[in-house]
Length: 454
Ligand code: ADP
Ligand code: ADP
Image 1: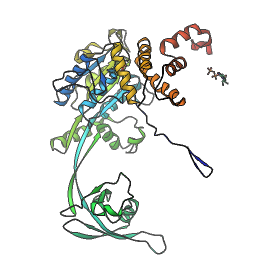
Image 2: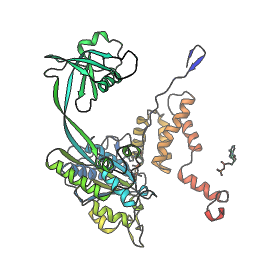
Image 3: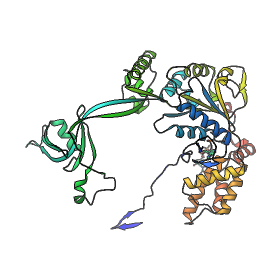
């Protein structure tokens, strides 16, 4: 803490939100799909990871159309983790959309519409666009403000390359842009001739010396050569769903940000599909099928399953990955039972991947990776206690204790999380089993039957 006058300034810690799967960077496989036991943040689960590797190969070769992948295994056995690994392994630019089956049931949207939107979010369209730009180093900017201070501003901008120099008149809109972007002499800029948008590429290397005080984010670049006016190619990837929303006149493009898209008409989608396929023919666009991951797939009902059956056969379809922890259960919306609560015809098209419960050793490795990811250090004995706790509770619960115990460590200003810290948080936070036991013992304190309330 620092005292400035009588104002108290606290040290501000950087707040980082670390997602439950942030440690996963890929599938941890060698080129020949051999599994490396601990790699890319994944541990054990060899058979499933190798199978996932085959799926990635097929995706990359474009051979998975009309199929789905089902990952089946007990809770906390890494189903989501492996789906994340798949998405990381197929590449940065590939869309990965993850939903839980129960999300499709809402009052605002029909369930098949919700599924359709999820499908189309998982398909990327890479659009190539040639634009004309002015690119050069700024030699001088002059903005003329009207004497009254009101009314439009105009000005002049001088740009140069190593080969030429030119002066441009700035209309009022461009003058505003130049002010807004704080363009000064020595900046290397790109101006989109169509939209007037200014993109600061960096500072000219020639100006390095007069800007010692620049922040570390400042990029120094060479003064461009050749013509000032040139054509450049831009590649943008947007999802098919975004194109739907932008083109559905009832909502307007702002709906992309609010997420409040409502139902999109079938005709709009048909037209867009036609257009996108045309662009592909003309080499203007590339279609990038991504991954749609649906967790708790047994929560889908018969209507949803028939939708999925049809949708994966369509021309434009992402790779569908379903996950479930249910065995032989009823298919929602029917009286029939089926493996994983999924109808036979869909199961039959799916590549089924199994995950198995973890050994104590695997759990130890996963906990170690998580501790590292959260920058938490544990005493050796504390780690062993944590492994024991995890084996009688669950992996997720064990992971929760890492961050909560670390809060206690910080409070007592210790270096590493101790057995004592762990004991305290274990007592403070209930795992599922203890919570259930507590409920059973104290049933009379809780309302179990909603009818009693009335
Ligand atoms: P499931 O989807 O099967 O219920 P998760 O994938 O959510 O289980 O696993 C629970 C937690 O354990 C997650 O934080 C996940 O990232 C982590 N995890 C599970 N399996 C592994 C693994 N093999 N390697 C590394 N982390 C794992
Ligand atoms: P419920 O569990 O039914 O939501 P509440 O948490 O609202 O009950 O508790 C009822 C009242 O008792 C509230 O006014 C709450 O502030 C108070 N209360 C309950 N538990 C405690 C506690 N441990 N310490 C202080 N006040 C409490």
